[in-house]
Length: 284
Image (cartoon, rainbow, N blue to C red; front, side):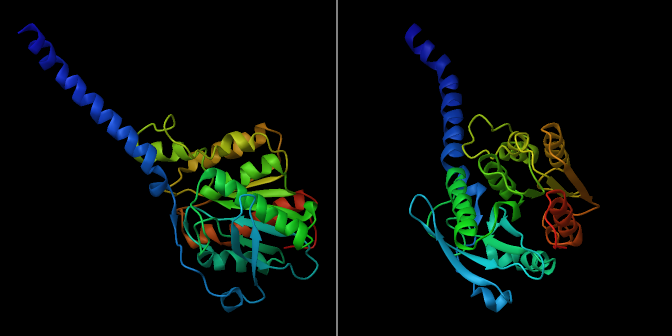
């Protein structure tokens, strides 16, 4: 009888343990399917939607061939912007951004990650880091872009991609649109659940920018419901504390994906401003 009583007393604890382990397993194994939202369809030819742009490909260090769009610089501008987009869609949804950057004279490389835009592979933080390195190498080695004329621009999750790349390979300048402090911080802000201890792809933007000393622009919307504006402000302050010159721009009322924020004049003005701080001339 005593043994049965002990089993009955332990059963609720066992149930709780099973529930907790099941929840952790769900988060651990299912987080990437919730985190990345790629449009895997192949976009149209670049020239069909972005006059002057070219379809290009380059290889990653782990053997993938990635397709991207490249728009050369125009006029007296010889700087190029490597664009790392957010966690959804593909390069076809960034035509307006590329056009806005190109209108200021800059060249543009619209990078599509593995698993996005018809590219093979599955997105992970380590994988996207490889993709960004390959994109940078393509610009420097195949397009002849000078390191002092290379600017990184990341949007949302892409701010984690370019900030990590900047730690390894500093650009002339960097633009962060709607930067998060880290991906687990965004999840916690949205769902009020601390997941940092179990999250695999963290994108620690705040920690990375603290190690970057090139000019940095931080552009965000005061009405952002995905990445809290306070996180973007923390990123800007971390860059300042690390010794970088910072251009901080808050777009009043703009939400995360509003065109006024994603491809508007505030963003391209900030791009021109940090380019000038980096000594880039002839653009804007």
